[in-house]
Image (tube, rainbow, N blue to C red):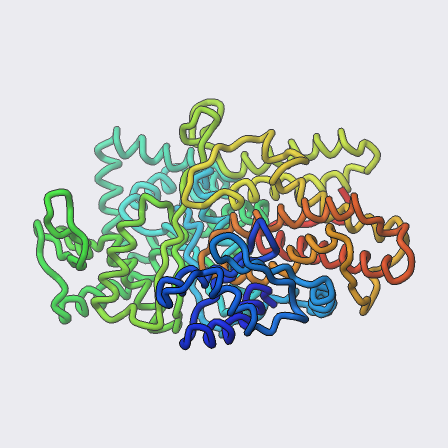
Length: 570
């Protein structure tokens, strides 16, 4: 249910009559009315007539009497104010729709590549954005009915595993498993690195172990699987704390593509796309040049015979489009990797592995900064562990909950703290335009005022408390009637949910959904202040209760799509 589309559909035949051909009405939200049609201005240049006269002709031919009040404004805009009766009818239908007016598009297979930690390395705050944005994309696309494949592109292969396996042997399997399972991944990796840099004998053993790993030595592969398995167990604890929909079956490590690499390179060669450069086998995708104007290479096979990252990424695209049948590939990776992925996409197009209707999209994002404007780090100046940040968020939220409501028991406080603390971290990220950096600010993200998770969660809980205090449920099949200006404003916002979801599903700009939910919550606050609910009589009371319930449902669904929990009590 999209009001802009409904109005555009009513206006389009009138524009066609006046212009003698189809014209886009260009209906937008307006500060001067509910909506504004801007199609007249471009039409005036073609017809050579005053735009206000054309606007008057369009209005005369439009069938809008039952839908809205219309007037010409400014140089030729058509202002549209939706009739209260029409709003009531639309909202009454919306209240009975479990999908809240959101239409399901044609289903497709979508692969979302996100999170991607490295085995035997800690998940740091740098993994936060990919994981949270990717999780929101998965939630949204699944709710819309798409088949979504979650691809957690785990870094589980490469030359560092030689030194990691040798270090594992030095300290013993049980001790290594313990260090990894309790999340001491960085210490494990650093200890291996120190020995590799300082001990020549260890370095030679590590290099020999890489050869054994790549050649399939049974004992080496078993030790490698131990490293991978224990690291995955730890990553799953972080995902559980963060409340994201990633599970064990979603790990798609780089090693999964090992058997595909040689066939991929052979096919690139057969297609005439491979060229030698410095002893390496490269693809030079069209449209990419360096500062010197020379074509930029994608190294698919290095001069030593090993495969580059590009080979794995190309193998992944080939597998996802040809074997999984995916038509949309989303790569939730930081903006610094944009050129690499655009080159990979172009190479895949030239190879015929990424052809219509399949598309690949780099869902890039900026960095998380500290108060000093630099990359967010721990107090000691080290990279900040993601699990530590999440634990602190929950602890801070628990302290706020105790101050606000000292009565509830600790179990209730713990539940609210988990929802609010984790929600605050996620929402601070998702409410920011993802291509921009943002400053991590505890006080701002945990505030009960402003565009924050706690404000929206509290808005939802406040609405639910209306029904709880009155001891009633939301009225079933209530007829919603709009009369007061605050009701009208709330109705317009509620009916915008479907359009917002449709836009965000295409752009994956989740700050637009967050901004919509904040506007809805503040609009409801004005409605609740100006329009008595429980003190109203009969049909008005039922209508306003239905508006309250509908607002709570939209807030709940919107926040769920962002990965936030909405407690009924706060």
